[in-house]
Amino acid sequence: MICRSVLLSVIAVYTASAFAHDNLLRRASPSNAAEFAQLRGSSKQCADYGIPALNKMVHDHEFPKVGKIASILEHDDDARALYNSIQHQIPNIGVRESKSHHTEFGDDTKQYPESDPDCWWSMSGCHKPKHDTIPADVYQCPGKGTWGLTFDDGPYCAQNKLYNFLQEQDLRATMFFIGGNVINSPFQAQRALVDGHDICGHTWSHKLMTTLSNEQVFAELYYTAKAIKKIVGVTPRCWRPPQGDVDDRVRAIATALGMHTIMWQEDTNDWQLGEGASRKKIAHNYHKIFEKANHESPIVLTHELPKTMSEFIRMYPDMKAAYKHVVPVSACVNATNPYPEQITYPTMQQFVSGQRASQGLPSGERIRVNPDAKPTFTPTNNQQNSFS
Ligand SMILES: [Zn+2]
Image (cartoon, rainbow, N blue to C red):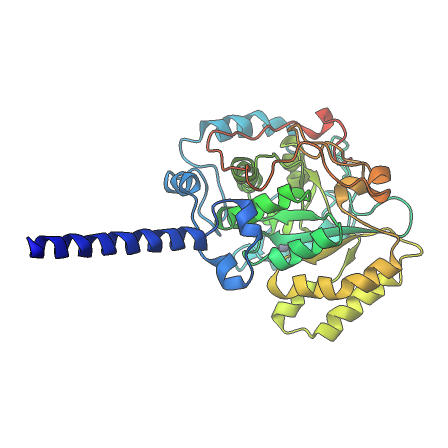
């Protein structure tokens, strides 16, 4: 009898401590974007918190492999039908030669004609397509003294310091998300929408897009939009090509998927901070752009990478002093409907007069991964109040 009661109390203690341990574990990992936003320190933010609905989609091969060049997945009838339906919109322009896994051009691309028949940015800096059905790239804001604030390559797992700073300064930015990163950092991606930033695509695997086949270009854009829709709840109407590599063939496919091409007029080259460049050198790059505030309104390229985020924070006081306005691309071009979903962003006029809140955004507590959500692709010429 005594033995049994001792045994029971041992079980009780064990159960209580297991329960406490389970609770601790649950408290340690965020269960929504609002809880994620409270985390400090990169190890907590970058821990694998896992979302069962997303894990199931990855397990069921709903997305290409993270980091690999996308192509249309077997049995993806929606993607195949959409791809087939846009064939007539794709101009007959060759795929560029490449070496080293589509991150470097082949030598024969140097033979490209100087007349630039394909508006190939990498060769000529062209922003105005030679094919008249394609909208021009957006690379600057109207007027003078406006800084178009953009961050490429996110979401990065330890982003809260940057996003908290943007919140404290009442800033919004345009985020160009890599599809694979959205899969790896879903609460981070959700926080970007909750905080009122613009969500745009930056391809699935971050390769030189003109070196990929039509189907690969389509899939790189399509699956990035699909990941953003299922995880964040919106369909992006904007994208930026990695390294700016775009021509009229690639633009035409993006246009058919309803995505405007957003480039930049000025480049901080801040990514070089991770490749050995000194902070002094990058600060110098920023300051060269600050000096242009009296005669330019550039959209500026910066990155959501570990070292570049803190550099932006360090540079912001001087940026604010030099430029009258620091705005996201949506405000700069009055894209009050940056997504087909029912969300309204401020006009430039509203934004600069302090009315910066967007209408219809989800809260960090309520935003959810939705495996049933499907992106709505509206070709760019059928869009209202979008990016052109
Ligand atoms: Zn990039």
